[in-house]
Image 1 (cartoon, rainbow, N blue to C red):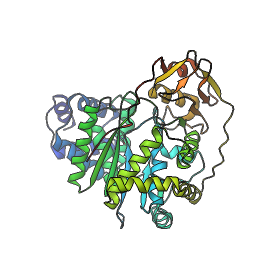
Image 2: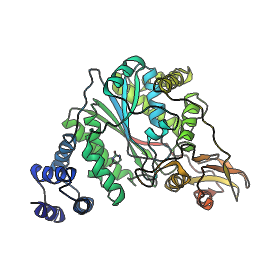
Image 3: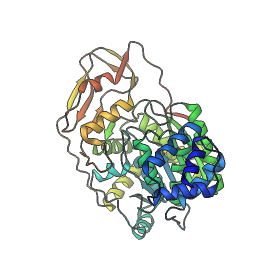
Image 4: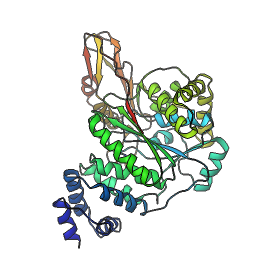
Amino acid sequence: MKEQIIEKFNLGKTLTYDELSYFFNGYLSNDITDEEMTIVLKDICANGLSEQEIFDLVDIFIKSGDTLHFDFPTIDKHSTGGVGDKTTLVVLSILASCGVKIVKMSGRALGYTGGTIDKLESIGVNVNLTYEEVLKQVNDIGMVITSQTKNLCPMDKKVYALRDVTGTTNSLALIAISVMSKKIAGGADNILIDVKVGRGALVRTAKEAKKLADLMISIGKKYNKKVVCMLTRMDNPLGNNIGNSIEILEVLDVLKDKVRNNLYYLSYEMASVMLSIYTGMKIRDARNVVIEAIESGKAYDKFIEFVNYQGGKLEIRLERPIEIYAKESGFIKSIDAKELGSLSMELGAGRSLANKNIDYNAGIILEKNVCDFVSRGETLCMLYGKNSVDINRAFKSFKIQKNRPYMKSIVIKTIK
Ligand code: URA
């Protein structure tokens, strides 16, 4: 049977539920090898899948493990992966400080994109909570961030790890199946998906991102879930800090209302949209509530409460960095997110292999961001970490021009 299934994928023919289930469940039970699954994943990248096959695979992925249920209305968020993306920590603190109950299961860094779980572990937060601990905490303080439990969508875990090393991450069908099966199995009623678009993202164009968003919204409808997709730019890093504990420092700055950069604006807009979905209030009113939560310090206090509750300590001491200076004066036109993401990983902040250790204090702080003016000899960015890297890569990531560039809004479009 498996040869016929592989052949059907190769010819781009439509497969039945039973055929898909046989093959993917066979992979989970090691009856289908990595090599066989890789052939199929490459065919899916080349030929796509029909809508029915996508729906069937979502169902098969969900049924590969446990499904969670909560007895209160839930809202969750997910990002398709970016560089410097610490919005989860800012947005959840804002929402919980506004009375929203929110449980988020997050992942680790792999490749050049970061993971919330590593960022939290860098300050000693316990991210291995039991279901009972999650319920107690969400009732006590309104927010929980924990590692995805072992048996939640194990099929996605296995297939995603293979996609990561076989160049099969950027199929829209596979992304939609991976994201939606996890979110539905995780018990969310309302789901906000941040679809990253651009040089530093899996999806390169807004047109493709719109297709992905439409697909995820239609999967959500099948399961009676409200899905909202925000298409957001990921050409330049999000915010100024890339790393783990280094990113926590920026979360504190945004929640203290000390910086108004693209991270601040994305977090503000995302929290407003989520609050509006959750409560049914108008988006204009939700924006006012979010601003008040930041300006009053309520959201900052909630983040501190959360860190303390999960056993973390905000004592971050960075070593002396290497400074990268501008060789010419001008305005920063762009900063290559993908290049700085992989440089940060090489400095020690990420993993090249799934089981590698992380240097929690490694990473990059941008002293200048897009549209800023820099004079020759001024610091562009600072590199932290014990590993030696080619510092020219940092320097070359910055494109400088004479005229002030036009500042594009971080949110391209919100699709409901
Ligand atoms: N995020 C996921 O969870 N899965 C993908 O396939 C891509 C991004």
